[in-house]
Length: 97
Image (cartoon, rainbow, N blue to C red; front, side, top):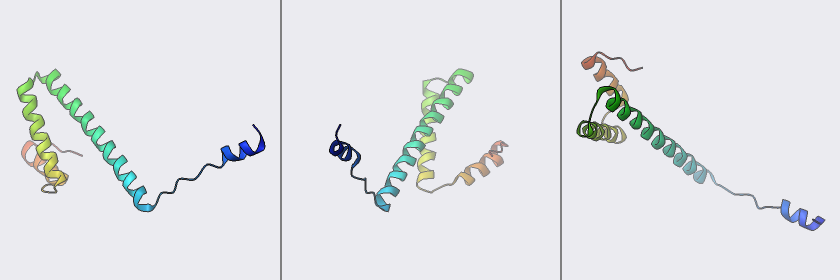
């Protein structure tokens, strides 16, 4: 490789990203991570309910439907995690920390 070729290979154009594009990329990466984690939590929950407590398809589907309804309420800010924690503590006697 001669000198001109080495210069040309080393002179790649930098990628210009403005703050808005960077923020959008961060938000997309965060949402993808949250979606992946949500799916993993659902798989663990369904496995535990089926494997340990012998829940079948109907009960598991009802669980999923309710789970995603609550998730939608959280997303729409109709309820908060603090509301859920407080209710679970009061009604079921379980403290979620």
